[in-house]
Length: 191
Image (cartoon, rainbow, N blue to C red; front, side):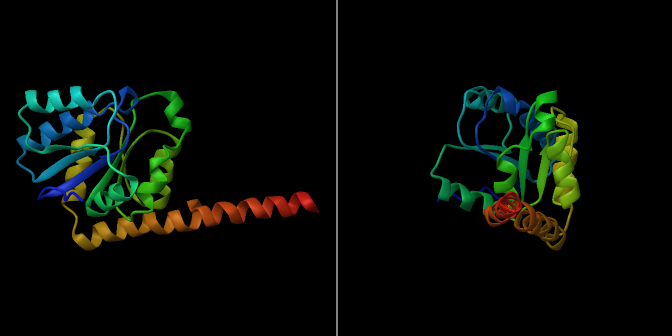
């Protein structure tokens, strides 16, 4: 199982395609590198954009961008556990504002602060759960600011934010809760 590089690691795990617009994170990494902060962006997974993202990072000479190839889901969990913050990023699109990316639940269950760069419902969820920062998508400046803001927090503060997300997940989103809510609805129909 891989271990993350030294420093504060913002991890994105999953598909890296056009919809994720992850060149934003590469550009945020460039801003952070110029400020000489010990913050890395780590990308785990595969997808259509992986090669172009790697090329962009190399062209910009960035040493704070890392790529980990696709791996079994149980190994991804160990990488997420090592992260300091987890990134959800989708391009600006009205369609994405009425959805909550599926990785949101998996991320909340890790008990790590989130950086949510998706507008609408997903943003509202992170804010109401007090589980991290919500930022405008496709803004390298806002993403760099969010990463630096979390980087500046103490370990206790980061754990509190992560625990907020975990407890929100357990109360509102876990499979057990979903089954319970389904059974309640089913009982109402039965009457």
